[in-house]
Image (cartoon, rainbow, N blue to C red; front, side, top):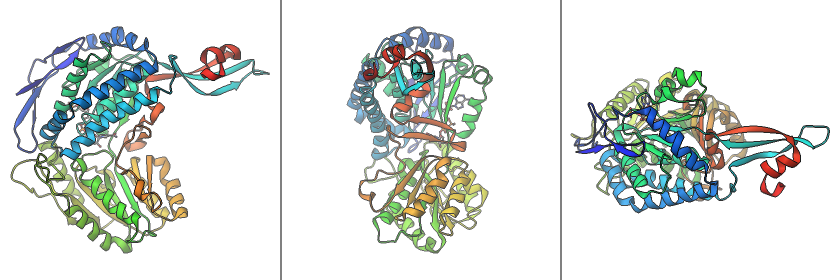
Length: 515
Ligand code: NAP
């Protein structure tokens, strides 16, 4: 059995104490064990602050971008091996594993490209100069400066590669050293990537540390200019946000939590249209990709009530095309849930939903003698306002059809019952209806995806998180924001309002061509 160690204070360290065992969710075989007990977390922070931070801050944005480009390339060289680990420890089909791993290397490469536009000075200019005095002689200029702190990244189990590296890309480009902690149940993939990163020698020492297992008392030791970027359940997010040290010292905490995303079919979409075609395709994809263990997966499907029988039939047919089984077998399009605890959670969640819904396909019953498998499960709400549908994130291949009147306002009222979500997707060719819907749901979401005949052919699936667009959502979704191109650096930088003689501000802190 593999022992997953941690890379801290310049060396690999194996934890002491009772380890947690990681297993293969298809076969149940034990694969690895992990423990972080015995790690001196103050030494981890000191190493990042004293060694990694200064080394990163000595580089320009362009130079840091070069590091990200090299990291992307070296990780990509190991792609096949990493896909194998994703399949063994994460239950990923080849397609699911590629989604995670290529998403990770693609995001690193995207930030390497973004770096080229950020210039060779250690700050970023925000907006134009603002006249403050009687004349422009006394002016203001906002700039972003790198915070001399440490970034602690705590990731969810479902994207061990992408989750770790999308956060690392932004922090490292901003010049902040990272301490990465993956979700334990799938940590083998993140650990292997950490091994590749450290062995490559690409990053300055201290810029990247990796903790396999618990973060111990690390968060109680953070200081005002440090930050925590967390991805995981709303429950753990709330717990972390409330840690007294983080509250008292105003340590920045970015939370990416769970979300009850919706897909909304407008009444104008006819069954022969391209829009309806992508609606069926993307809803089924979102439900089954990574066995529905995706923060952006569709959980609620809003359908005009007179269309519910036909849409249900079409979605059931679409889902039936997803062969479920051993993810190592290329014939299978959906693998198991990640572990027995998730399986038990999802089965219990389906039962709670089934109490207020009709089951159109799938259900809570086991579909295999071994392995953490559950069938793609589509439900139809008897009462679309039933609280459980809008409060329980069943983190598996599970979604519920909610009948609504067809009025945009009624669709908004249901969609916002999720309490704030990461993404909503709307399918319509009616510009007025779309505008009313988007205007209503927009403030409750981090992202609104609009599908129509005009863009159907070129559209990317709504569940796909892109480095150039922000990811996050208000309320229940955690209230955080990540990525969005240059915006993704803001968590790691301080916006400073400089006020003074315009000549100095332009020359030293303005855009290069203002100087
Ligand atoms: P989780 O149980 O909340 O765990 C998330 C991370 O927090 C793990 O690394 C976990 O470590 C760590 N953790 C747990 N308790 C902690 C504590 N007291 N102090 C510090 N760290 C702690 O979530 P999960 O089951 O891994 O992930 C599934 C959830 O993540 C779903 O709800 C999903 O919607 C959400 N998610 C959201 C996004 C997004 O971008 N919004 C993306 C992906 C997933 P251990 O694994 O060692 O317990």
